[in-house]
Image (spheres, rainbow, N blue to C red):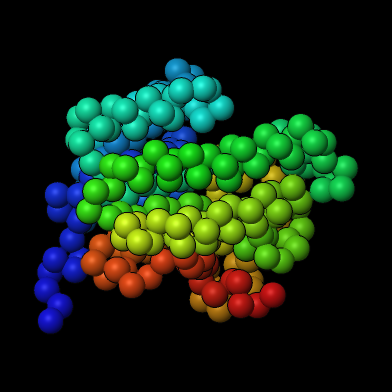
Length: 259
């Protein structure tokens, strides 16, 4: 029998990585998780970013507001240490972080530098694995791990370039994480929105054209919003998603089925 608990996150605690401002996918996720009753920890990249993220953290009544630059040694670990000290456990964690040096991102993939490719993989994919490893001992009653991806991981999408193989690595990392942590009732997902006008997307060349193409291809005739993405992500963390793990979940109005 299904009861209201299937759709609730009351009493659950989770981490949101990657809010840059009110237009961020991570912020849409934070709003949805909070709406379902979860208590949140929200991070900001650095002091320059803090004024843009703090109003978002306040809006979702975040209990913890912490700095986290995954390229800085010890910062991600520090976030989880604070969570351990304050909460003692965690139920979900959202990874919505991606970065590549502009010169590598906007050029041809075959021309990308080893350094740029390595930075992109480290920030955009390997940090998900680091997050998962740190969350594992705190997910004492199981939990859910989320990473944000894009259709350019499996099909060539004009202008996506370097991030295509990087997101493919991230999706593969999610599948292996789901397999390795499944025995502890820890589930892992890649969530794949269509193109959204976020700060991260602004670094892609001709991104406006990509958005219009996606809107035209979508069977629903529109692009997802950050709240659409957040609602699906939060749902997966509730009891409604208990038998799902390892999948890439598309929240793109059907854009991905059109090739």
